[in-house]
Length: 338
Image 1 (spheres, rainbow, N blue to C red):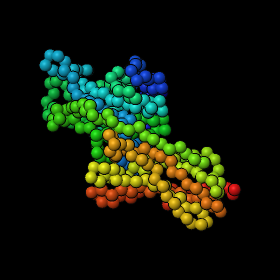
Image 2: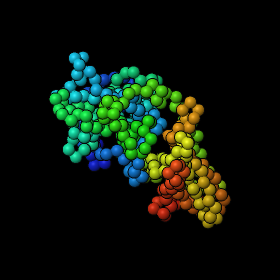
Image 3: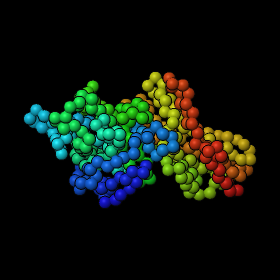
Image 4: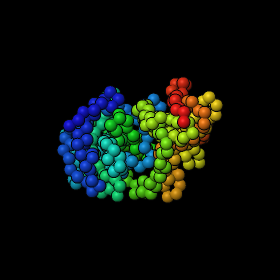
């Protein structure tokens, strides 16, 4: 078993032993530790300075969650408390990349409304390209004789945790960056299944990089694979999780951009190119983007490039702007003479 820390909270990663070997048809693994609720950091998908992000590309999808009947007119119990069971589909490519699925939740019955997390067990039933997981929540839930259940509220949301400390949370039917699934009296404490959800999302086409590659990673590190040379090309690969502030929509369609801007010195010429493309569902763009390389030609006589990134959107709430610019200093790279 491996123990990792995300956001100051210990995550017991019992699933890590099987993530690389999960097959699409399901499987079995010992999950005793992972299936015990552990303290968790609150979801922070809308925080620009955090490692949490919102998934709208169907990499982690809540299929349904509800209480299960015990066949005798009541609900299934564990430890004397009512059980909420759910299922989540995870993209197989994410699992192969080392992602660990889980669910975070909080209950109005818990003093302080703390967040907790639980692991999941792989099961069958997912369509091609996905692995289905099951989870059970019974901690901080009511027992059958408890009063005040009408006031019970449970917030929950599935996530994928990555080896670099980042997490992405299922927002495939949640519009707001800080939204979570809410179980309360209004929906009979359940999220029903939706067979159309994430059923027709395109497979992204990512162009190949050209020349030297500068990679700006989600953990704020930067990797350069070769020197930049005047007269040649170079590529910028940018993780969109670095800028998550502006994600507005216009008439239901995505209305935001992240562009890489490059200033070539000493000429001062500035060029820009997009570093994102949108997924589509049945031919229509959805508010879920993936990274694509931005490719630039280095003019003759260039001695240095300065790079920064600009995130903007226009929606009903007005204009939103955000920068990734090394705190205003820009990211500088030397250029080698031909």
